Picture: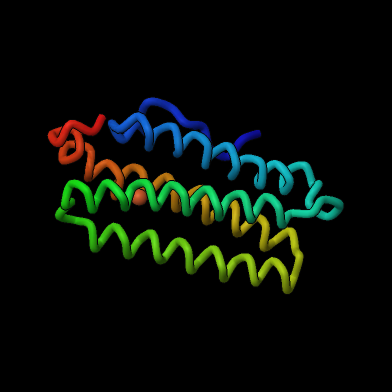
Length: 137
Ligand SMILES: [Fe+2]
């Protein structure tokens, strides 16, 4: 069962970001499925971690590009959240490498689930009106 399902309630009002959020959720689901189906022990999890990190970075960079372009007033706070995500992912990956445990994989899936839902519903939705008013939809 997927951990994250994108529905309209997660829309941030900008098509490009919604599409990226959908793709991120699909990658997180892949990771979570390894945990629920107990497949992680015989699969190399590293490519999925790499895919997730690469795509999260692409997504953060896209948002940050528009923050700069439109001089988004809450840019600093939002950048700090992206930085915290990057840092936490490194920590969790290190933990996974050290323990290679089911517990860590579950913690990672849970962190990602909670982080993205909170971030989309709070931080990202904060920019909807501002970006839409600047013509970004
Ligand atoms: Fe964001």
